[in-house]
Length: 452
Ligand SMILES: [Zn+2]
Ligand SMILES: [Zn+2]
Image 1 (cartoon, rainbow, N blue to C red):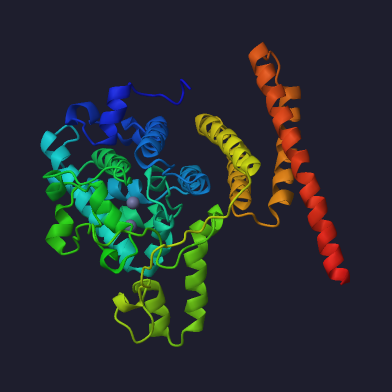
Image 2: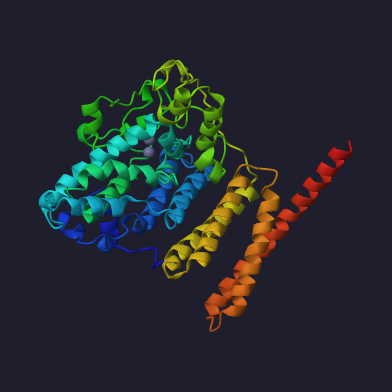
């Protein structure tokens, strides 16, 4: 736990709301900028727990569905895991541009530069976010964030693996003037700020609604009601939506329904990340002519031949209540199982992040693939896929083998470590054998069906 908590409580909470001063966040070099987002991980968990408890007390039911919450948090962890390998071009390019224009460079410890960067990054985010909704190949990445049919703090963590490959371009206009370290500070706080606005438990916030992006404004952004489509792209300030004509206030008379216009209906983390790319690939080969093919990539996700660039609002399906959600029902033991194994996977994820800087490429890659596979298994159980028992029992035996090898190689283990090792081996042994009857049952059923 001590490695999870990197700041004192008040500082951690202030950072989530962007309440920081220039003095405490100045950094001369990019290496000096703390990983504010990683350091906030424990505050994300506390926020989610708090929302769960307040939701229970206020609504009388859980505002977070287990499978959906796990799916959202998994997307966030996939993003962090792959970022070790998917380094963008962002900072090398910012450095290059910054050094090309020394006469307009601002100092890293200038309060004026700090405040200009605050507005500049937020304006850059607005245009990135708008393009991420209006240009199909960028939407293919960003749709991950919109793929939950729920709206709670876990939804904030539902992030794309590949979005970083395009987002950095929108901050290039800042690069001649502002030090890359200042851009990195503000881009992290801009992201952190957007965590708390993903909740239904906070109503409108009076005069703050005019200036700030709030839960109410962002609920509209996540809606699939017609009036919500392509609205409220804000990061921290809502003023840019008001300036550029994309602002829409929440309507109490038209309850927001969340998620994609065509719901995903899957908890498979890889499918969640790449399904729209797959759809684009199919459409690219289906449509005739180079102009139409390019339009599939560069026009809006709702575009079809003969329609306007952003598609037609009439094509957005009507909302009828009650609006059913994708919700495969697991038995109680299944929910407990995925809860336990998700927490174990999370702890391994945290341990991996702590150790990966000291690892060479091959063990780092193996560790990452193992974690991706482990979370994919949890997703398959949530989806009640036929192959989930096979995948999961294979994974449990794999972990058991890994623990046995590790146990035999590690010397000088404390009593506590020995007990943890033993506990983990018992959990994975029981888990592996738990799935075997289902594997046998499925195989027999398949054989009988083939004979018939
Ligand atoms: Zn969006
Ligand atoms: Zn959001």
